[in-house]
Length: 314
Image (cartoon, helix red, strand yellow):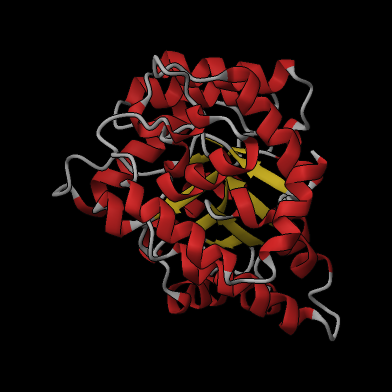
């Protein structure tokens, strides 16, 4: 199979790791969730990654996640532009969620590694991924592996990717490098040019594109989509470096604040809806002083006006 055939070409560009709104009873707010997804797609996102880490998927039940998947499909959103989180520490849940994601014809499934039993090594991770893929039993499945060892404690090694590719071929479609380390992304691009490699931060969006990567998947894109979209649209132009610099400044600012609490705080201010601040335990809300400091720092960046203009137009 050629490199062009092997790569899922529609799944390229700027992808938001979508944050999930919750009611005051901590149930997913389906209407707000769908509305936010629509806003993202209309304001710079080429695609979406719902139910990833930033979406608090690991704190939800499988039933709650299935409701959110169904809500996206019922709303008529472009499912082929979505990579939906289907990972779980429970094999049966991972299979059930992945099957549901296939049923709604999403473009791909983001599978984080099972992260509780950390001493099983590469063999344990291979067994889990292989069992999930075999039980789903669909040759159209496209899996994106989630490498975020600082959170999961279970790195997606190059040997693991090679083993899975050898066994399952194009079912293993890509990798999100959520480590924040550019050298890891660069190495993935060198070793696996046939895969769709996404940076986990928009700081490296332009570098990733120039090195042959697919783009970025980031929680901060929930807010920076109006800034990130033009970087992807014009990455071959002489405007790209200036656009990236403006985007990077916002991302660097957010790196000093907790995710997804900081993104939800700004969404609260943009929408006027205080329920955006709701977080599932064990995550904690931002202290008032930190909220004030985040707003103060954002106000110093002139490019934030682009985000505000897009939000007001919604």
